[in-house]
Amino acid sequence: MKVIAHRGYSGHYPENTLLAIAKALDADCDGIEIDLYRVEDTLVVIHDSDVSRTTNGNGLLSQFSLQQLLQLDAGNGESVPTLWQVLQLVNNQCLLNIELKGADTAELFLQELAHAEQQLGVNPGLLLISSFNHHLLRLIQQHRPDLKLGALTASLPLDYAAFASALGAYSINCDKDFINEALVQDAHRRGLEVWVYTVNSVQRALQLQQMGVDAIFCNYPAEARGWLQAG
Ligand code: G3P
Ligand code: CA
Image (tube, rainbow, N blue to C red):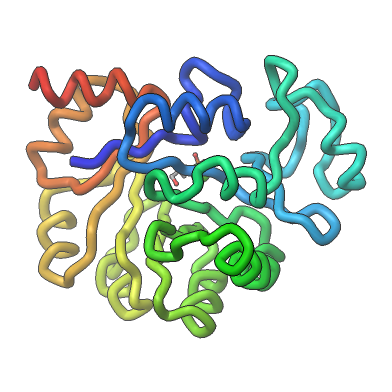
């Protein structure tokens, strides 16, 4: 079972910062997950549509200019990174799961990816693009059918695996409290991987491994590797 560092190594370092991502790379995880919003014409890595929880600022992201946003402290003196900075740092060292949070991120992402492939040598085969907004995934699929897609869901619609399969997704990405063995088997029959968020306990990680889950998102990637080896 793969271990994906959730928002970087966010259990010990400020989430979605270059520091948390660098520490995840050091932890030798299988992949790193980040969240994306758009501010002006730039994609930035932050989980919430409000900066209050993760920075020393207050208010909606949409009220900030890019310059103002980049001046905020996202923890340990780190600023909110841009997608471009993250792509440079990760440098194809592991899989990068980019979750599209903002409804206006998909088209800009496609443009930025094209530049990053040319200028940074980004390997698109090492990306998984996910979103709870499946309209964005369809748009990505139409323009870049080569990209892996992760269909996220917070609940468990009856036809979830069938839908994800019809979308051409690579994986279904489910909440740890909704997953069950029948869904894992149905997904696998359809050629889909099953990725589960957010798993921060040894007991749940081992249960999911037993169930045949393909990957877990964890805030403690190095610890998770140890749990799975010991189990
Ligand atoms: O992509 C898995 C997980 O990150 C989805 O939930 O709220 O942590 O972005 P959230
Ligand atoms: Ca996320």
